[in-house]
Length: 297
Ligand code: ATP
Image 1 (cartoon, helix red, strand yellow):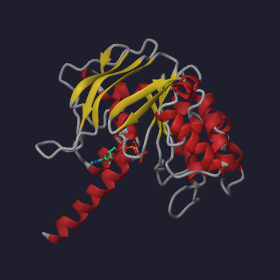
Image 2 (spheres, protein in one colour; image 1 turned 90 degrees about the vertical axis):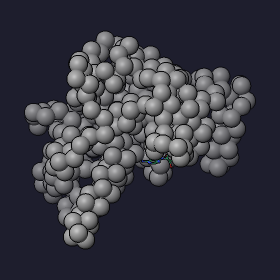
Image 3 (cartoon, rainbow, N blue to C red; image 1 turned 90 degrees about the horizontal axis):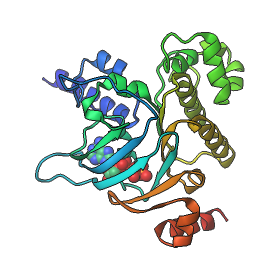
């Protein structure tokens, strides 16, 4: 019994941690032989992306079910028009990353709906949904494989030229080229150890290669040094060009250029607007901005 319990428990923890980091889990599910939490409807169709407009419509959500559940999202509505960037900001625990997890459909909403070009994401096949969305997660979990494999994972079958082009665009090529075996260098525990910023660049390269119409960027909570942070933000802006982008921002400097900023507090939208409009409104966002500016002074 004990022998059985320990590995299962370990897998449970591993599964939760990985799921939390929004990794594409298809391979992992196969390896672990575990059921997904959400399943395709029997009549699920393939997602048809026209422009890639994303809508959250009165979304409610709690991680736990039943009497004791704690509501995490309580009627969240906003739209990301095709090709635009919407940034979500707010205090820790407000539910920002949860929005990203729901859009990628790691969980189903408890109320309301999320649509892409008018199609409820629960009504489409998950493989088609996940093909349309690229994620740069908070903490990228890389496969214990070569750095080339980790980038090419964005588009199975990609050749070395494509991989290198994506790595250059994500400004990680020079670093890789300087590694002992270049793109054949193994990353991970026993191989090349990458910093948080380097891992994010690998994730950006992977996403550029995948070339999805919808992009989710969940900014790392742990601060990078400011030069690295500015560079990642520039790479992200370039990656978001022409795509519909949901940016989960833990620092306000990331969001200044967003088409709209949504301020989330305790699972509700409390303010929205452009950076300039929110400063004029002199509400919560303006206060957060002043605090952050003061912190940097
Ligand atoms: P931060 O800025 O600190 O990353 P956030 O706004 O992104 O915060 P979320 O990660 O969306 O917040 O979490 C919202 C709430 O949901 C938090 O109170 C968190 O503890 C809770 N939560 C997150 N993941 C789970 C989970 N897997 N099971 C239960 N509760 C969870």
